[in-house]
Image (cartoon, rainbow, N blue to C red; front, side, top):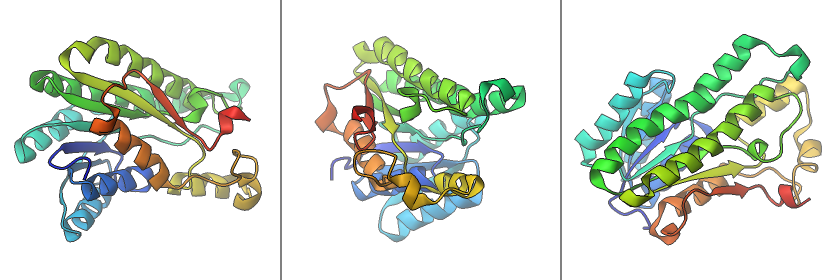
Length: 252
């Protein structure tokens, strides 16, 4: 139980990678705050954790709203006594537009969640961790933060920004005993991915053959496992790092 007794907050934890991460952290002994903009979905994930014998509470949290993030951190501390791990996973899908057709409203919407939301989340998570003089933050970026994809300018820009935020924060809080890292997932089979494939009318099996050296989608558990490792004592000397979990995509 790598996270026995730790308190973890996961944003965007109502479905997909976030829900898997919250559940896996609970399985490893963490007490979890499931932070999710869809309150019913968040409560369902928290209830599922409790049904399996874990400890979890849900917080309705829109990462674009700073007060929601203040409340989510406070819920962790008030309910469980601390905040030891934070996984900033909440995100919206890529824009599917070339730069020449970029829409300002799409850019603002994506950046508000995928980048500004990470900044606001870290602001309040790290304030609590600085008070404790301990803690770990993992920000979920994307392989697009390392190798950009066409037709996703806003998403790519936001995810590049997440790595910049991660490294800056890591430098700022290392002397307080706090670590900050990022995970850059490759193509992962989540509800968001399923919706994107359907929207583009792309055959998943054919598309998977082009994604990485294994020719398949990652499963959410594979990304969550990397996040869990970064939050665990096993990664005690890792900070300021962006870990690609991409099935060798960057090597090809």
